[in-house]
Image 1 (cartoon, one colour):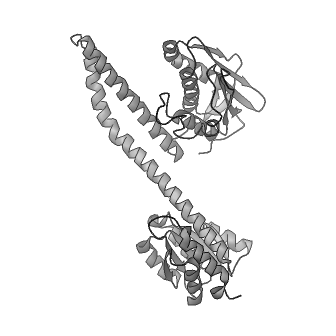
Image 2 (cartoon, rainbow, N blue to C red):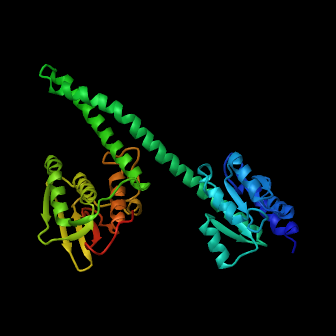
Image 3 (cartoon, rainbow, N blue to C red):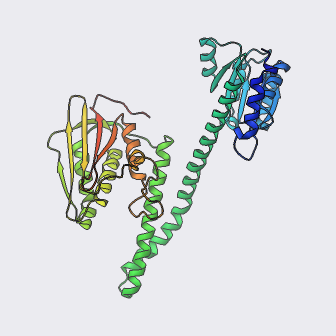
Length: 382
C-alpha cells in the first residue's frame, strides 16, 4: 500500500489533532532526505500539529538546524554529499543542538547499519517503509523524553543558582547574629528572638548545602577518592559526630563494630551516608529509645545496619523513600526534606553498593542496611 494514501496516516493524524502532542508550542521537527516524496510522506504523517521543516541534504540540515533548534531530527542515511552518518556526527558535535533527538529513517535496517547510527549519536532507528503509527509513537516518546530532560536540567541549574546566590546573603546574616548572641548586653527576650533567626538561617544554609551537593552528585561533579577503608571505623566516627544530637533528643546510640569490615571506597563520602542514616533514625526515635549501629563482613562484602524503634515508614511512602524531596506531608512536615536519604543511596551506588530499608508498622521501627563490596570486589561508577 502506498504510504501517502494509507488510512493509517489519516487515522494517526486525527489522533494528533485530538491532542497527541501536548504543550502550547508546536514541536519543531526537521526532516532530512534527498527525496522530496519521502519528505512529503513525513509531513503528511506528522500532520499540522508539528512545525515540520524539510532539508534536502546533510549540508542543508547543518545550515538549518542551528537556526531552527529542532526538537527532533528525522534523518535519512543514503544521501549524496554528506550521508546521514556524517551529518549526524556533525550535528552531535554542536553544543547548541545537544538536546535534539535524532532518529535515523532509512531503508538500510541491518544490525550493522543500526549500530553505526548509534555510534555517531543517533537516538533511535526507523526502517523504511515505516509504519506511520510506529513513527508517530517514537516521535511522541522522544518529545516527552526531551521535555523531561529539559525540566531536569532547568531544576538542576535553578537549584545551583539559588544555592550560590543565597549562600552569601545568609553568611552576611549569620555573622552579625553570632556576634549579637555573644553580647552580654542583649536583653533575654531579644536574645530569644535572635536565636530563632539564627536557627532558621542555619537550617536554610544546611538545606542549600544538601541541595547543592545532591545536584553536583547527580551530574558527576563530586570527585571520589577511592581507597582501602574500614566500614567499622567509618561508623565509629559517624556515631561520635551524632552524639550531640542524640543526647539533645534523648536517644541512646550503640555501636557493634568488633570485626574489621574492609571495603574500597571514599571514607569521607561514606561517612555522609552513615551520618544521614543516623540523623534519620535519631529524628524519628522517641525519647529514651535506642538507635543501634552494627557492621559486619563476609567473603563477598561488608555491611552496616542502622536500626531504630520509631513509628516505622508508611507503606505508601516506602517506594519513594530514596527519591528527592520525599516527605509524607509536604505542607506540614517538620522532619527533613528527603534529600539526605536520596544522597545516601546515590553515594552507595557510586561504590557499587546498595542501600535498602526494612520497616514494620506501629512501633516496629525501621532498619536501614548498607552493603558494599570487599576492598577488591568493586569499583566506583565515576
